[in-house]
Amino acid sequence: MSNTNIPPCGVERFLLLLDGPWATLIVRELLNGPRRFTELRDALPGISAHTLTHRLRRFEQHWLVTRTAFAETPPRVVYELTALGMSLRDVLYTMNDWGNALPDAVLTSRPPVRPAENEPSKTLEF
Image (cartoon, rainbow, N blue to C red; front, side, top):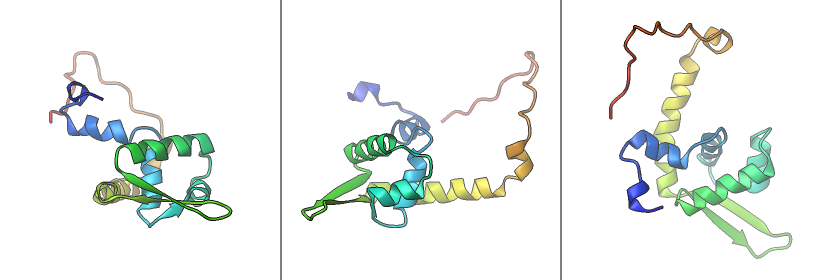
């Protein structure tokens, strides 16, 4: 990725590394300490081995995770968050607090009706 493709917005930068439904959940599990591949897969019911492998490789490429292979039989590989990966702790704690504060009805109800076309849309500027 060349520097000209790096977005200036922090939210976009965050999403370049932690996009997709499993990314933050993998980080959540690794916040509890180093994990083997099978431990991560068992902690995330529904994730495929392919998706987990792809995410872990991407995290390793972007310095969020280290991969340590031990010369044992059978081979043992352990994944661990780097200091950069651990810096996501507060972000995930904030997400957890926000999610826990949501009433159950918000998660089970129908989405609200879209605003009328004459209402101004609200955008965030960073």
